[in-house]
Length: 428
Image (cartoon, rainbow, N blue to C red; front, side, top):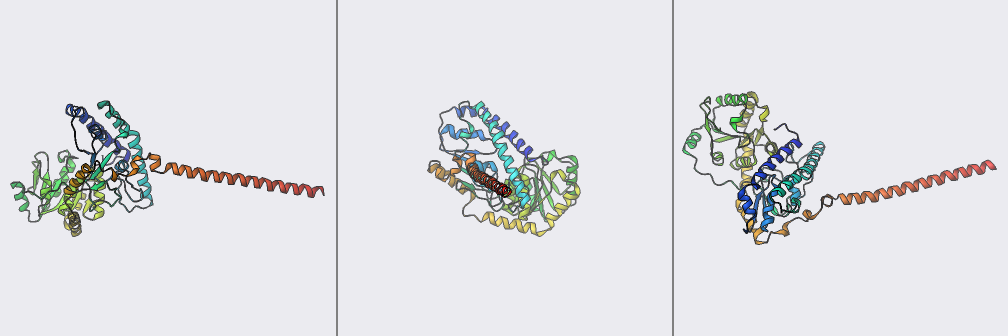
C-alpha cells in the first residue's frame, strides 16, 4: 500500500468509501430514519469519503457540521471555499512541508490537480450514484454538499502546518484527550517497574501486529530482546516466543499509557489522533507509516524534530535497531516532544469546549451562514478565475492579432512603396 501511486491511493480510499457508505445507507435503521418525520436541530457528520451522508441535513432541514478526521485536504478546501495556494499548502499525500522548492511546487500542483480530477470525475459521480440508489428522491449530490455550516478539524497547529482557514473552519486537535485515568493494575505495575523507561508499540487498526510478515516480527523481537527498556506491545494474539521485557496486550488504553512518566518512546503507524496523543504527553515517535495521511504525519513529525521515520515495507533488524537506538539515546527528540506538548496545552480553552461552543453557535444562529465563504456559490471556472483568464487572454490575443495585421499592412505598404520607387527610377 505504501508503494502506491497517488492515483492508486485516491482510488483505494474511494473504494473504501463506496463500500462503507453503501453499507450504512442500505441499513434498515438508516432507511427508517431517512423516511421518518424526526426533527433535529443539527446534524454532525464525519467527513471521509462518505459524501452521501450530507443527505441527512437536507432531509431534516437543519444545519450541518462536518467533522474531518485530519487536517484540511484539497477536497475539504473545495467544499468550504477555503483558499489553499499550491505554492505553500502541501497536499495531504505530499512528502514535503510548507517550504517547497520549485520542483516540489510543481509536484504539489500536479497532485492537487490530479485530486481535483479524481473528485469531480470519479468520486462524486460514484457517490451520487450510491445516493440515488438508496435515496431515490434525493437531489443531485452536488446540490447539497456545499451547505456545510461548520467544519471541525482534528488537527492542531502545534503539529501540522499553518495554513489559511475560513471563519467556519476550526481546529480542535486533541479534543479527544481527557485527563489520564488510573491504569489497569497489570499495566501500571509493568510500567512502574520500568526503571530504564518503557516503550509503547501500537499500530492502531490500520495494520494489526498479528499481520506482520514473519521476518519483520522476528526482527522486531530480536531488537526488543537487547533493550534495557521494557516494551508494552498491542498485539492481537498471544506471542509465545516474546522476550521477558515485552508485555503483550490485546487492548490497552493508549492515551493513559502515553501519559505514564516512564514512557520514553512510541512506536506507531502515525495516525493523526495517536500522534496528537504522543504530542500531548511529550513522547517521541518512531513512525512506521503504511498508508494515506500516515506518511504525511510522520514527515511533519520528523520536520518538527520529535520523530524518526522508518517505512514498514523496508523494516529489518538492522535499520529498526538503529532507529530505535537513536530515538532513545538522542535527547533532542524528547526535548522537541516536550516543547510541542507545551504548545498544545497552551490553549485559551480546552479543545472539546471550543468544539461545543461552535456547534452551539451554529444552532443559535440558524446555521451561521454569515461565516461561509462566497466561494461555495461560484462555479469552478469562476472560483479559479478561468473565465477571467480566458477573457483577458482573448483581449490580449485580439490586440496581438490587430498589431500583427497592422504590421503586415505596413510591411506590405513599405514593400509596395519601395517597388514603386524602383520602377520610377528604372523608367527615368
